Image 1 (cartoon, rainbow, N blue to C red):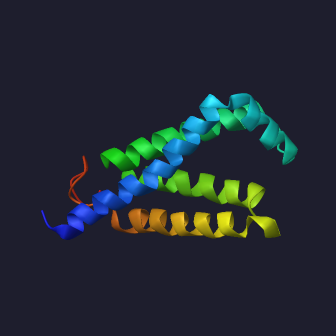
Image 2: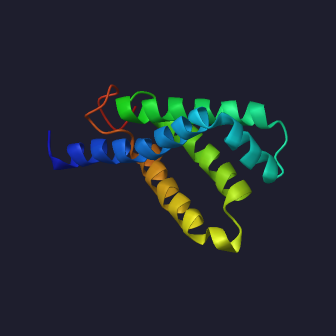
Image 3: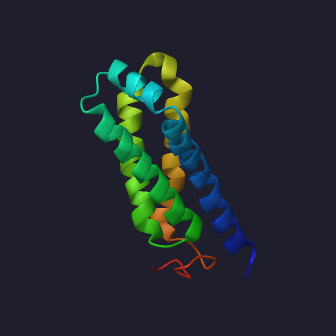
Length: 126
């Protein structure tokens, strides 16, 4: 194990934290989240909110454990692109847009390079 292996793990954990926090926020303020989504003009808000919670939670666990990591990162990427497009393209959302692009960059690194050796997959090629 070398410093790059530890950094790959730390990177996965840091990316996962924001999605876990977001899923937790949706769960603990479910009605408020539905109202926010409705205000953005989304249809079927209950379905999409539950789907968002599932993708954020399962994708985070995938990153944390380093299991099916590329699939988890890809699912989070698709979710992040959709959420950014729907909620963060207005001029007053510039920082949120840029934050999401930075997170997307980290996810793309995980997709490209895999989880690293400190993972259930045990390497970058899984």
